[in-house]
Structures are given as C-alpha cells and as structure tokens.
Length: 273
Ligand SMILES: NC(=O)C1=CN([C@@H]2O[C@H](COP(=O)(O)OP(=O)(O)OC[C@H]3O[C@@H](n4cnc5c(N)ncnc54)[C@H](OP(=O)(O)O)[C@@H]3O)[C@@H](O)[C@H]2O)C=CC1
Ligand SMILES: O=C(O)[C@@H]1CCC=N1
Image (cartoon, rainbow, N blue to C red):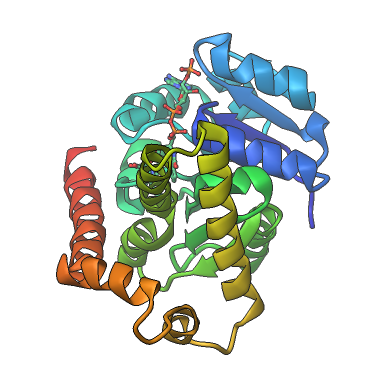
C-alpha cells in the first residue's frame, strides 16, 4: 500500500485502535501524527508506537497528505472551523470516522471542493480484526479510494457502500456491534460467576466460547449461521431449552429494534451536528 503522511485529529478509543492496528501492520510510525488537546491519550500512543504526538491540530494537518477526523461528532464543527481558517485542503484527502456527520456538512465546514471519504470502523481494528464501511462521493478519485481501502484493510475488512445512508447501516451492523457482543458476554460471565466460577474462569469460559464460535463461522463461509446453530442444538437437549428462552423473549426482534435504534440516532445526529 501507499504510505502517505497521516494526521489523526483526535486520539481516543477509535483513533488509538486504528493507529495501533496500522503500526502492527507495518505502516511507518514516522508518517503518523496524532493530535488532541491533552496528552492523556496521545502520549501513550507516541510512547508505545513512536508516532508524533501534538496539541497542534493546524500544524499537523498542514503537514499531512491525509487528515483523519476522529473527534466526537458534537465537537466536529468547532474542530473543522478552526482547521478551515488556516489549512489548505486542496490536494489533501480527508477521512472522517465520525458517526452522524454527512459529507455535505463537511463541505459546508471545510469547503465545497473537499476530497473526503467517510469511514465507519469499529474498535476490533486494534487487533487487526476491524470491520469498516466506506463511502465516497462520486468525485473522489480511484487512487484515494484505493488508499482508503488499503489503509482500513491493514486493520481488518472493508465494505464500500454506494449511498451515504449505507454508513448508518454499517454503524448498526458493525460499528456499534462489538458493544452488543460485549453486553451479551458480560451477562454470560455474570451468570457463570453466580454459578460459582471465579471471575477469571467465568471470563475464560465465555471468551473461549465466543471466540470459538466466531472462528467456526469464519472457517465455514458456505454454512448458514442457522446450520451452525442447529449443529449445537440436540433434539430434547440443553441448547434447545436455552434457545427457547431467547426466542420466547423475542431476541431476534430485540436485535432488530436495537439496530434500528442505532440508525435512528445516527439520523438524528446528522441534523444536530
Ligand atoms: N468508539 C467507537 O467504537 C467508534 C467511534 N467512531 C467515531 O469515532 C469518533 C471518536 O470516537 P472515540 O474515539 O470513541 O472518542 P473518544 O472520546 O475516545 O476520543 C475523542 C478524542 O478527541 C479528542 N479531542 C477532543 N477535542 C479535540 C480537539 N479540539 N482537537 C483534537 N482532538 C480533540 C480527545 O482528546 P483527549 O485525548 O485530550 O481527551 C480524544 O482524544 C467519533 O466521531 C465516533 O462517532 C466510529 C466508529 C466506532
Ligand atoms: O456510539 C457511537 O456513536 C460510535 C459510533 C459507532 C460506535 N461508536
């Protein structure tokens, strides 16, 4: 992949996950800078990975070929307005990882000719297992699309969406999704502890069951998920009884409602920020 000079504006959970994944995959540390007002998140990244840490958004953005906007959506307008005053974005690629801030809004904030790709990543990027949705408006060139694909492929898998609404659908299915699985695993660990397992053993049981199930899915690309479920479910057995509780409590409907709630919030954010 091409190694362009990258500047992250924001050094939080998601920027940190991408930076860590990039360095692990061989992206040169001396081409990465990370900016945030305080040193609490960016300094550990600099210490661990040798990237440049700074509180100077403008200076770092000026020097970069690619500016990654990685602040909370509610801060995006203020951050962009400050950048817009002093940074010439022509010739640069801007990547936004923010939920709920549309390309049209970035053009309002940073200029009509902005060359921008939206990325919706997730935190497993930290361990090279990310899932990112990518959207670019028509005018973005193939080289920039390829660079963005390569960048995020370095930390996981990518999927392009044709319309910007697709980014909100990626949020529901992948961006927010690690938290759904963590909640499920937390509930399982808590019950395992109530059954008498130590915290460590309860976590190991749940963690290994989850990562084993996930590895089995990955190793069985032609097998529907329903078949993998059926393979565990003996007639008259224990799994059947456990799954009956989930279906009686309408788990599929709950999942659908949760994913729709994430989309609805992203749409609200698009109006707010
Ligand atoms: N977390 C996730 O799983 C995902 C998050 N996203 C998106 O990523 C973006 C960041 O989220 P997340 O990483 O969770 O947020 P965090 O709260 O973890 O990090 C926000 C970062 O922004 C920095 N910051 C605040 N103000 C400024 C400023 N004026 N200039 C530069 N940096 C600033 C903070 O600085 P300091 O370090 O000093 O506090 C912090 O490093 C959001 O837009 C979110 O929608 C997308 C997909 C998944
Ligand atoms: O919760 C959020 O808004 C962000 C976007 C996807 C995951 N975290």
